[in-house]
Structure formats: C-alpha cells, structure tokens
Image (cartoon, rainbow, N blue to C red):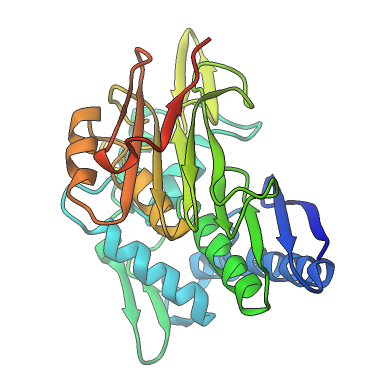
Amino acid sequence: MKPFTRTIPLMGTNISLYIKGADAEELAEEAAQMLMRYEQVFSANSEHSQLAMLKKEAASLPLKVDSELYDLIKIGKEHSLHDNSFLNIAIGPLIKLWRIGFREARVPQDTDIKAVLELLNPQHIQLDDEQQTVHLCKKGMEIDLGAIAKGYFADQVMAFFKKNGAVSAMVDMGGNVLVHGDSPSGFSHWKVGIQNPFLPRGNAAAYVSIREQSVVTSGIYERVLKKEGQQYHHIFNSTTGYPMESNIASLTIIADKSLDCDIYTTELFGLDAASIIHKVNAMEQIGAAVITKDGNLAYTESLKGKIHPITT
C-alpha cells in the first residue's frame, strides 16, 4: 500500500493530508472536496457562505441552516456559556472591528468597542433543534466559528478516512494535527512539534508523542498588530473588547478529538498557567501544555513521559 500526501491551499492556510491505504489518492481528492464544501458553508470571510447569510437574514427571522453548521453552532454556544469560558462564538463583530491578521487591521476607538460589546452575548443566539434554525436576537450580531471550525473539519475528514479503510493517516489543518495508525516511519506513535512562541514558525519548543489523538496549539504569536509601540494579538476577551491579558504565550491541548482541542485552547486561554494545568488535570483523556511569556513550560500529569522539551 503506497502512502499519498496532498497539500491544499484553503481557509487561509495550507492543509496537509497523509493517507496510507487502498485508493489513498482518491480518498485525498474526496477529502479536498469535503473541505471546499465546508469553506462554502462555514467561512466567516466569504459573503456567500451560509454563516454570512446568518448575519444578513437571521436577525429578522429564524434561518434554517446546514445540519453540520447547526450542530457546530450548538456546540459552540454551549461552551460559550460555560462559567468562566473565554470561548464566545458571538464574537464576530469584535473580530471584524479589529481585523487583526488582515491588511486593514487597526486599533479601534474605545467608543466603537463599547458599541460592539452589546452584540457579543451568546445567549442571544436562539436555536431550534427541531427546525434546525438559527435566530440572532440583535441586529448586527455575527457568529464566528473560527476558533473551533478547523477541529471539526479535521475530525470529519479523519472519520471519512477511517471509514474507507485508511490504515494510517494524518490531517494537518495548519495547526490542528490529528493522527491515526502508525507514523510514516513505522512507529506506533507520532511526534508532533509544539511551536516555540518566541521564534519563527517551524521552530519547536517541545514535541509530544501521540497515537489516535489530536494536538492543537493557540498562541499570541499567530496573528499580531503592531501599532505605536504596542503589540496586539488576535485572541480576544469578549468582556473587555481587547486582546486577552494573561501570562500565557501559548496553550497546547491534546485530546482524542480535534474539536475538543479547539474548544479548550480558547475556553481556557484567559486563565493563568497554574489554573489551566489544575483544571485540565481534572479532565479525562485531555492533556495540556502551557508556555508562559517568560518562557517556562508546564504540562499536565497525563503528558509526563510523552512531552519532550527541545533545548537550544
């Protein structure tokens, strides 16, 4: 069985697929089609996606949406409403106001930020499970699934590969890494690097050994706006309207599902390192590694013997 690798420029990144199994090339092509369809449905940056249609129409009346989009909105809303959660899928207007990561990025006026804060309450996303409809209760509200969508896509693609006989596979959504089976070198575990938040992309601070799991890292280095001596990152606090303030440079979550990794890298990011480690230690089948702004690496009990710092 020959392995097949494909790279797809999509969703603002390069998505890498590795498959070993019968019909690997055909599976990669079908996966690429799946991902292109997901972009048409879920994209927050396309005027023609179903998610964009919610902004235009769902404030006036409930709008029926694709079942997968509905399910992800429901999951996102549930986690947005958890106590002390820093995940908020209603954050769309704030993301659009700052535009960090785009050419028109700017530091908004305080008055503009305050006006937008009134639109960020996830309670105002009304869902009807029977009709599969979404209603945004305030005009100007906008759902942004950017924090969790790639994990969902990775899980769906991997499920497709497994269903169709892949003996080993990897999906890399440009940061969301999910693996199945043995690594290309024949080892039972895969070594996945954790980006060093203080060095250019491609430089790892540590690597973690995983099998049938996903690794996702979120960090303040990913998208940055520099203005008048200040540096603003892209991970926002929807209570203040400004980038999150904590001692965290990056947070890595390891879990069976890439969606869970996405959820908890955002939900926990505003906590300090000790609180994150304490909280994840109490969770089953989830691990966390935190790199603080002063360069310290801390990780949960579940990662002992599996995570290996890289010394320079």
